[in-house]
Image (cartoon, rainbow, N blue to C red; front, side, top):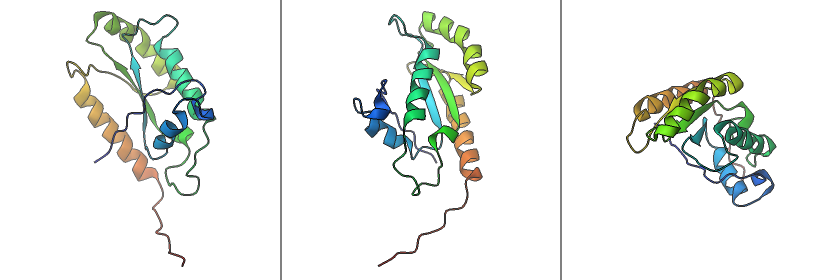
Length: 151
């Protein structure tokens, strides 16, 4: 069993408290695997999947975890990652995903999955792949030593 948390709206400056960035980033401290879900059907000028991922990674790198010493999950930078190219049911998005997939894999070295939440294409393989990533990460972590209560 694993839990998936959607952390929307990370904007430049989130790690410094802009918007709800710090609240969202604190949720990531408990996540074993980080997945960048990229909208391939965006029509906003100046946006592309690579720059979206780079902006998110910059915020993750700038964030200082608040659970230092309390979490056995380690630093956010060491967490396994994957990229999900979403909305491939849209013809232009499918073309963009085909164009960007290899660039994402070569630049970041993370697995890339293509999905459509509307048609449910690619969801099942994604779920199984995420489980394998979570399991491998959990297995690699040291055993949790129970704390002794101090009164």
